[in-house]
Image (tube, rainbow over all chains, first blue to last red; front, side, top):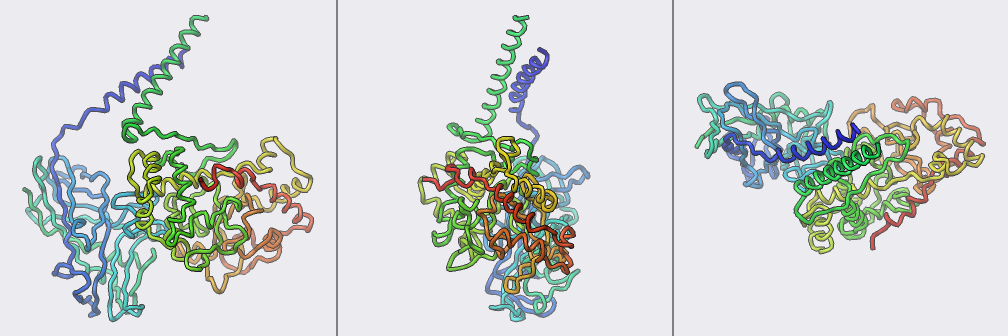
Length: 254
Length: 354
């Protein structure tokens, strides 16, 4: 008798609970808009037609440049728990202007740092078929060694010893010693906090300087290392370099 | 007393109805538009078997509609560039979903594949796919053969374009997922439902274990030998521990296939390959990752006398090779044939759909 009664109670409380789930959150939110401006040194990146020089005097063009930004959070000025964007996965692709900026909602507050992963967190590398920005359609998923290419650059260089003078850096690897995931934390320019307010958008501009891929802390010379297409030591070196390519250059609240 | 029982019965029934009703309502809210009522299927773990390491259907509820969609996709040549190479061209049911009698399978533009096509069954227990364990989830497995230039040689976006043109697919995706959107995630989840449902647990060995049949004397002797000398890697009841090991084959000078090391880059993983299941090997020959052994006798002979023992990554269990008398070898082959599962080989539910 008793267990059965419990069962009945359980069913009843389940019904009550499913009713109480309908409540909506009433705290006020505003928008954050992130815009990524891909650069080479101080000039906006132009694909295919412009020849650039790396710190070693090697020249190159860029034909493809894309990277994942995920798990975006903001650091609040009061030092409280940073907000995390829900389902936070974005593929920034220089070829697709629409991919360079995106918006999301946060609760009202002001914040002074921006945090994100460059790449896709390891959980999503191991959870089967994904969709949205993580759709394997975008040619950022390794089919033979499961996992996402976190950042990709392709181009040409006279210094390359490869067919067609090709250079190609597909940087990936999410587990153990081969992990290239890098968490980025960016401080805002002094005196320019982001302010999240209902009916307003806080627009943050992040510049990404591709020329940082070649140096500091690791020298990557095209003549020696024109290709990286597997997880491993070289991929980690490039990731260490590119983790320093981002700067917040502007914050506008309106 | 009778009244008590009656009351408790009424409570139980009411409670059950309420629970059922609550669940049903929740599904209607959370799983799709009105009119979406897929038939949920239960994935059966045979009695006495271990739990799969992860629940591959956790984010991909197994339904009749999803399974049937996956089955159609598995047999559909449109997943390949020229239409000639469905998944089933290399994974044939009568060969336990391996390629019958082929060292390497045939792919697009007169290509040979790089390795022997593995048999497909009991995949729910397999944490990593491919001979080198490079694929970490069943759902993303099909991306490898579909896009490999020596296999199906197609792009995912082209496959989706072809599926979009077929009204039967629009109907089947709707039935499986609640709306007509055809995308890579749904295609891969449906394929995983089909592949993950291919199970092998009705060989003579299984029937003996369930008390429905008896081994012959030779089979029983072979089973004893198996338990003493093979079971450490080819662990019952899956007949594999799904680990990656170097079993002492020499490096093929043409293929230069170093197995697991291709994935990890670690020299300690050189020449390590997945331990395959021994189930259905009567039909999944030839054997080894590159199909270099055509008979069971050759395979056993490899372990008796052929292992290259001076390889640094050789599995420690094999450093002294495996001693076996000729009689033990003959009986072992008899036992291995008792791992053939005719239910799997002839299940009409896994055949090419009409």
